Image (cartoon, rainbow, N blue to C red; front, side):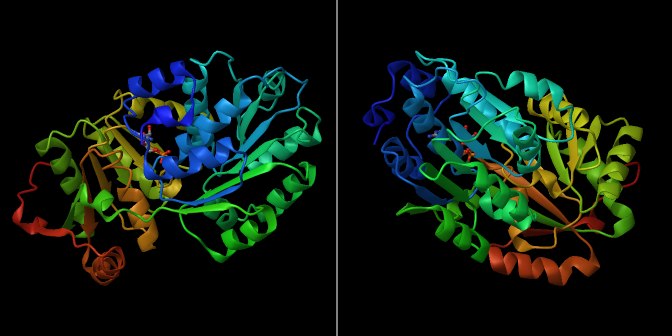
Length: 380
Ligand code: AMP
């Protein structure tokens, strides 16, 4: 099924080709016609499956002929759990809107930055991509009105409910009109997501895209057994010997992320840490530089393990293992995306052995074992 079957504007079809979208992904094949028909959708789909475009393209199409600015009344509200995801989703709206006969104005809003510029920018916005807390602040100060919302999207709904956004979400629902289209996307179907589904969705089309095992097949996984004190030298050895151009390193704590990035810099390797204690400006700047290939190593906490899309990222290293197998899959899923192969390396200490066995069992895949004591780390 090609993209031309959806009745999209010719300019949009061209832009899809420019962006190397040759065929709709499975979630897009199912979601796009339903959303164009104003149906509710529940999409259970892993990140990397193309779910963003599955709602952005039909929403932009449905808005054609309906983009006249209505004084701070937005048409479409997309709720996301993190600022990074707000920026990323908005970028997809911006790119595809820019070629349409009628431009659709979109705006990302999130906390941690000054509210005034966002208040000013809200004039004439059609699509608002927001994190819940900042959205409520804007609604309560009358900077935006939600009573004309035609379509509500909850992206990464499982994450939003996990993070304890529940109260804020319930508050937001009170401002929305009863009659609207609801689109709910989640990587996993938890009890919370199911409750929200029952509460929000009317006769939805339910789409279930399994975590493709061949998605994981695109990722070569390696497990280096290593002692705690040799992790730093091993990391530097890998960066230098593999000539990695771009590398995402995951740690389990903010402290460790800073610590690893500091040590890399002291050793002449361009690295920046990104985590919840950094200012929004610093986070956006680091991610932007990393995505464009100007920054070599990004050291991150699990803040970056979900949803964030980095084109052609060749390698992810788990400097420390995440606690849950699910987070492991999310982390390594930052590579091997959109059908490009990638490499995921995990540092396994003696204490991690058992936990890593469980991770591999849950994932249904085994990483290739490498004993780092056989590597000469002197000088690294
Ligand atoms: P998402 O799951 O929305 O984060 O998308 C994952 C990646 O797949 C992004 O880099 C998209 O640009 C890319 N993508 C989405 N749909 C397609 C498609 N039909 N063909 C090729 N790439 C796509």
